[in-house]
Image (cartoon, rainbow, N blue to C red; front, side, top):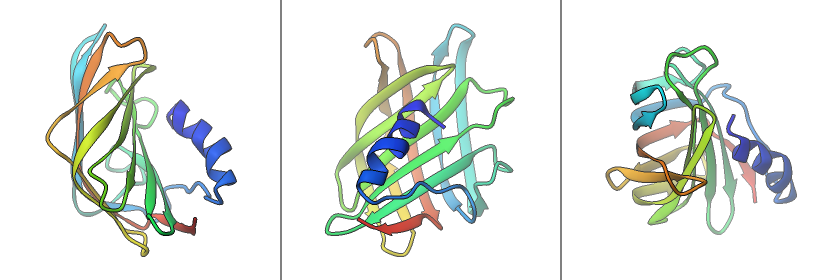
Length: 166
């Protein structure tokens, strides 16, 4: 789990009446990729999810997804690469609101945190636990020092997100 998501989960979400969920029953269609370079050289962490792929670690990722239902449905998603994987990618997190044109995307690569506000082509957050997010092409994420960058691309439909009243 990314450090920022853990802090968000522990501090902010309970105050807003949102519970953090685990990967039980969470499924995906689509894919995502994070590309860049680390001290170990270039990397390309790309994940493809054929129809109705369970995000329980068998597809290379586990995930948590919580949708806060209200006047502006919002979602927090954290995709985690299990320990021992060969990729330097640790996690990808994103936040979205229904019909939003942008949202925060974060990645942790080799222990370094990267983030940016990325443009979305699609951001649909449903009351039924479904979520669709597609970035407008590649999104350039910058590390906290503002020096290093990685590129992220998301095109996902998630089913089975935990839905809470917000």
